[in-house]
Length: 210
Image 1 (cartoon, rainbow, N blue to C red):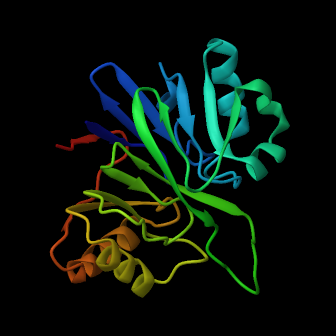
Image 2: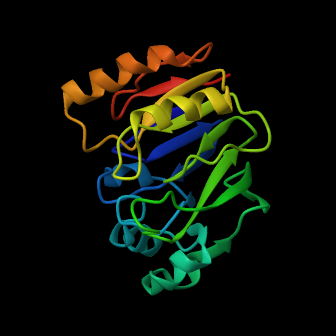
């Protein structure tokens, strides 16, 4: 499997002729959706769900489908019949990948807010994208996409998240608000991750996961 990093929280997974994109938001590049039939979206916030990009992709491809929480569908009626509701505890197949849905709630920012649904996706039992949460999945995963910067996140929480999940490797996401210095600062602290291999994938570049 190849994992390609696009802007912010968006990644693209490719294996043989299978292609799956997770969280193409307003901070990510439109070409992440090139040639894609199916997309996973963790929750309704625009940095994870760019409705205009998805509508444009659906107009080019009648087979296009977007899997997301039902609450997110309610906030994006423009998606119409391309939207498919998913919930925590569910398993389904998207673009030929096995997908397990975990979590269920967005991390709290302040005083109970934002209080919206957020699911994480474990793809082929290997890659875990948590969206805007620090939910630890019930089964081990080899590759963790760890949020690096958010109003709901402290650095110590990101470190504890990696330690709790104990993946073989971790790559940062949710980092569009960090400049180069901020990225280097976060990467340096991830030296406290324990036995997990950690690396940053530049936007538009890929890494092979075996």
